[in-house]
Amino acid sequence: MNELVVETDGLTKRYGDRLAVDRVSMTVMRGEVYGFLGPNGAGKTTTLRMMLGLIRPTAGSASVLGRPAGGPEVTARIGALIEGPGFYPYLSGRDNLRTMARYQGLPATEVDRVLEMVDLADRAKDAFKGYSLGMKQRLGVAAAMLGSPDLLVLDEPTNGLDPAGMADMRALVVSLAEAGQTVILSSHILAEVQEICDRVGVINDGRLLRESTVAELRGGATLRVRATPEDAALAAVMQLAGDEGVRRIGNETLEVDLPVTAAPEVVRHLVAHSIDVHEVTVAERSLEDVFFEMTGNNKELVS
Amino acid sequence: MNALNLKALGNSTAAELLRLRKWSAIWVIVGAWLALSLSFGYVFNYVAYKTGDDNFAGDGAGNAQLLAELMPNAIPDVIVSGLPMFGGALAMVVGALVAGNGFGWGTWKTVFTQGPSRSAAVGGSLAAVSIFIFAMMTATLVLCAGVSVAIAATEGQSITMPALSDLAQSFGAGFLVLEMWALLGFLVGVLAKGPALAVGLGLVWSLVVENLLRGVGSLLAGIETVTEALPGTAGGSLAGAIIGGPNGTPGVLDAISGERALITVAAYVLVAAIAAVVVMRRRDLA
Figure (cartoon, helix red, strand yellow):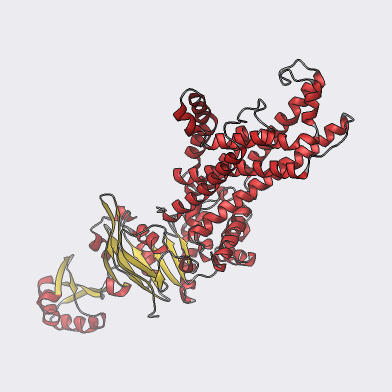
């Protein structure tokens, strides 16, 4: 699990005056699902393209599976869906996959296997140009999975999928992760990342702001206590959590920096001070909350 | 090139052949080429022969001359006559479509993440185009042979096939001319990152600009030297060398010697292939 699969060091890409990616150093471990988050234009896809050798970095380096990124010995062990599926429109889904399988020297049975995995076997004979966006996306994922690669790079794989398709895609990624597949998942859908990913990297304006586990990023849960009279409740809770450990958040509610396990003690303490306790809840920050705090973006930018 | 690269090149060629043979646009071009070859090589001349001496297609030639041009013995001339004009243009369209569409469709990006090196992937595509051009030339030869034998039989003429060496020389020259234009089209498709500009520029260049330059070249010695190195001049002169000089067919020339034309055409083939690989190896696919 601790084996490095991807390691970038000061990866930088400049287009003229515009710095698309600015000294990004990130790591992905074997067997983990790594979420790569950032608003549109943050530099996610450019970073992934450099990892795959599709574009050359202006500075810095990327090592993938222990070798410099982009070499055929590396790309042969990676499956990737980058910025939408690219296929021959006049070919059927199956023939597109057969073509890609031939590039790798894989047998036709491999095509059938991945078609089943993305639930496209029934429409495999249809021309790619007639596919819905969701079907095209699934075919892209199928192509990425040809040859059971050691690393799967999926850039917005749920784009264009309906809710059922998104759920299927999530289930697919989860099943791959359970089988030990290393996955880099770039996504706008933060709830999806929170649900699936072990670790995340947050990128904005080309810079990697934070890289950690989802749990670390979200921080610990806090208690919320609605009690009256509020001033008395505040004074009482401060005796347990300290002056800095309690905040008023409105509606006669206090936010308390104590572990969830301290809830019974807080309630007993308040009741002992003749304070009415109306409600005690556990407050957890979502990945979305953290993301917006870090990037300073409003929700419309990423939804 | 080591064994691994040869295997990758073979895989890439097999992949490209699969998708090329299922591409209807390619078969439309083959059909157009065969129809044009048949029309200008046999149909018009045969109609002229059957309707007498004084007509547009006969251009004053006697019936005996027209019939001789329709016989199996004339196959080496017929299969190269149409190459400098429409054959080259159609081959260029093939090359431009094969390379250029990969950018718009995003298929180069998909292919480059499938494992083969860029050299192997682009080399496979070039090899597939070359195999396709070879097959196109073979189909032309078979069609011309079949039609000329049928005409000879219909007209009660003896069926005399050309010498194998003449046939091989003509076939080889024809293949090289088509290959040159196809690979130049491929290169322009790579440089233009799309088929539309590549096809447009390629056709204007091959059908218009070179002819205009040759016209100016007859007035200015400096320009004439330049035109002698152009692909149209080389291809036309190579066809001219096979036929034995200009025969009135547009594009068939005697501007340079057959040997020089052969070397120039071969040089264009090599340069176009190498340049396409080098550009694709270095290019960012953003």
